[in-house]
Structures are given as structure tokens and as C-alpha cells.
Image (tube, rainbow, N blue to C red; front, side, top):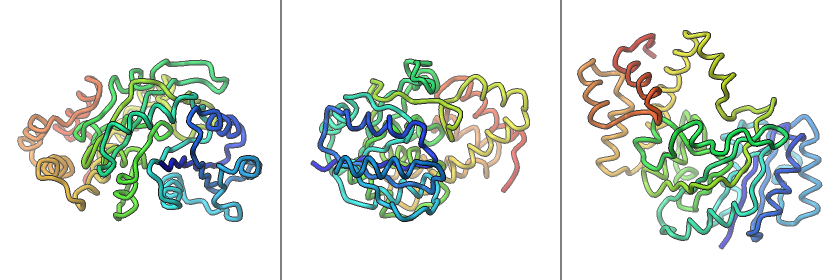
Length: 312
């Protein structure tokens, strides 16, 4: 069994060494770590070179290139670098708990290898000093983890740093042209739930570090308050997310979906082109929603009223 860990770095000198060390401390040891640096300006590349010289399981795939592709294209490049049975995605600033690889590989063995599979877990949210802020990121932010296509189309609960995919799912992404992805972890969750299995393990396997330099990260109270004090900005964000999730889901329509799932996706991506009665029917018939009741209320209210909606 070939296991590959994929890591894309960018100006990660502050926490990168700790993350690599946590991978080296995994109880499952037969892995290769591929690292692609996405144009760092700090000492990130020096740290990668040092680790790759000390541990032959660690490969720096672009030591002489500094091109910035962005996170999605960078991980896409890593995924195509070598063929494996399973691929794990790693951020540059978190900490993997020692059993992470074993837990997810053990779960993967319960599913057929010829069908796309994504296995993900819960996370503990910590501050930059690794003090626990939330014991469960899933329960704090999303209430529950998604495993079905109808859930994953409108809200993602797959965090890249705890995602593991099999070769069949990797081929489904790399072998087909896609456009307008929100994030690679979200799209892989869509593919897995549409064509195979999206599996959640209710166990934290990572310390998800929140710090001043986070590009993405957990939704904090401060971030929420900044939204609510600027309602126009908030509604613009809601609509931007709805459109982006529709565009992302539309990629599935060029793939061999079964009839039921094709109908589910088509009715979602075209819902804003319909009259009020049809929009209401689709929401009720297909159950498009968010994970929390309040967010579902906002989501459905916007779609029904078209409040502050702008045609493309």
C-alpha cells in the first residue's frame, strides 16, 4: 500500500517544522511526504530542504522553482506528481495527532478501492500556542459533519488538513477539466459524495492552529461580529457564496452522474433562474439547506425573496 502526504507551503517558517515533526511522529510510518513551496519569501524553503536531507521519506518537489500557483493549483500539481493508493492533504501550520494516518487508513479499508472515497475527521481548534479553544471544530462550526451530496453542495465540512482520498477519487479530479472551484477540499467532498463515499470519523486527529497569519481558518466570534456590523457586506458575502457553490457544483454535470443526483445538481445550479413558485418547490422538494437552522433560514429566505440579489 502506497501512502502519499501532500503539503503546499507559503511563508510558513513560524510553524512548518512543528507540523513536519508531527508527521514524522505518526504511528503509521510507511509514507512519502511531498512538499511544494508556492513562492515563499521567508525561510520556508530552507526548512523544507533541511528536512528533505535528513529524512528520505520527505521530497521537496520544486527546490529550484518559486512560481506562485495559489493553493488549489499547488495541491493539484502535488496530486499529479506520483500515483498512490491513498493521499493525505496537510497544511503547513497545524499539528497531526500521532494516530491520524492509522485511524483514516483503517477506516478506508472498510470501503471498495474502485469507488471514489474521502475520509475525514474532526479537529481540535487551538491558538498559536496550541491551547485548545474548541474540542470539536465540527460541532462548534457546523453542528454535524456532511456525508451526503445534498448537504455538501451548499456547505462544506471537509477541512483539507484532515482529508484523505483514494486513487479513484484523485483520478476523478485530475482526469477531468474543472472550473471555478471554491476550494479543493470542498470539491473533493462533492466528488466523493456524488460518485462514491464521503466518510466522517468522529474523532479529532489534528490540532487546527489559529494565528495572525491564517489565510483561511475557523470562524471566530470576531469574524462574525465584523460581518454583522456591516449588513450590506454580509449579504454580498452570502450571495457570493451561493453563486460560487452553484458554479462549483455545476462541474459535476459534465461527469457521469446517475439520474437522481443529476436532477439534484441541475435544480440547484439553476434555481435562481426560476420564478418564486418554482424556487419554493425546489427548496421543499430537494431539501437544499445549511447545517444550522439559522443559516438555513437565511439561505432559503434569500433564495425566495432575492433580497439584494444581482443578476450576473
